Length: 209
Image (cartoon, rainbow, N blue to C red):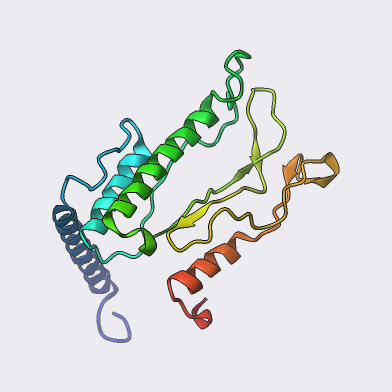
């Protein structure tokens, strides 16, 4: 027994029951929003065979169905390009290979989502942030790829975002500017980006950071 007279087993069981109930309520809420949003979205031009676009399409349905969710997360894997990052065929050039295909899918998915938000009239209510768990080195390895690096770039876009701006110092690719075995050093802490979005867009007070 614990200090409040309820056994640890009973407390654990109560927690599991609350979690299960919350999951069922959330599932029902998501399904209702998708049904209200309709299976046919405003923008019919969604790419096929694009996993990221499929995830963004569901998010677009939830937004159209007036879901209460404030933050959505969609994942695109495959950027750990230790080999064959670019097409080695000189006739194809750099616009080919794994990295090009990934960025092409990213572009297609984001374009369809942005077009959908504009068609819904929700573009001014949306901010999109891209991020990755790692960057890449600035020189290739022995397998036509790149290894994990310290710095990366990210994109922020939305109807109320001041676009066509570059923030931070332009990356210096010189050998004496590299850190950690040919990585670029970051000059903007990603936590400041998160904080700006939380405070300026989501309305989180600074004291809660």
